[in-house]
Image 1: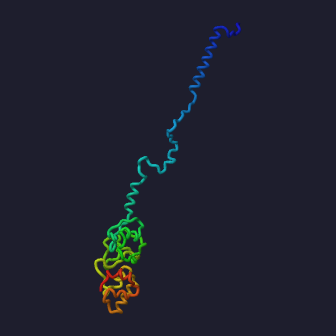
Image 2: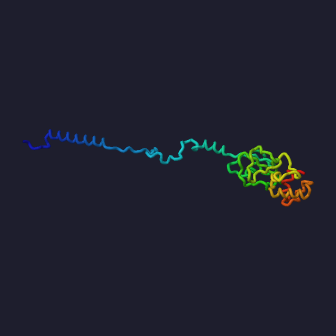
Image 3: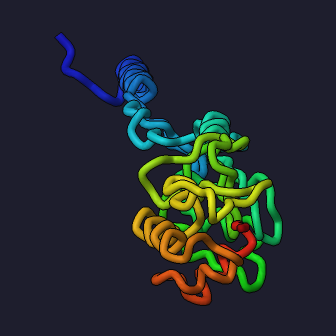
Length: 225
């Protein structure tokens, strides 16, 4: 039996083969190892939990969510009222919900110079379709063409618009419908009429307690004798 001799040609060949086998096995093992692919910079990666952060998001170029329906709702929520009488721009005005009589008056350009608006409750909220008369009023029993006048508030006064209230024949209700004249002042006018035996001129209104210069200026074009 021969001892192992690394110097012999056959032994050297086997050693080379073994080394090659080891290198090939190592290379194959290295090739089959798990790999982590790097993510290129600048590429957006959507997390698996995509819905997070998408609340309220809209596609690029798209308008606000629900903008179309909101516009329709806004238009339908407008309040349209008619403003007549002694204003700069009488007619229909469009107001936002919750608008006041003062807003309607402003939208109509304001009252004419010298017109007293004390008979109007400027803080009252307007209602759609109503008529607001400034410095004038509807004839007794007339129905506003622009819509019903709210009751129970200091809304547009009822009274003469195309006709005048006759101080000598008017009832308490007729006088109460004049701008700035409530039931108390209307009764005073009736009492003064009785005491004087009737009014001889519109200027006799000045003799009624509670009718000063401003109130008389407001009423003088709405009444007759």
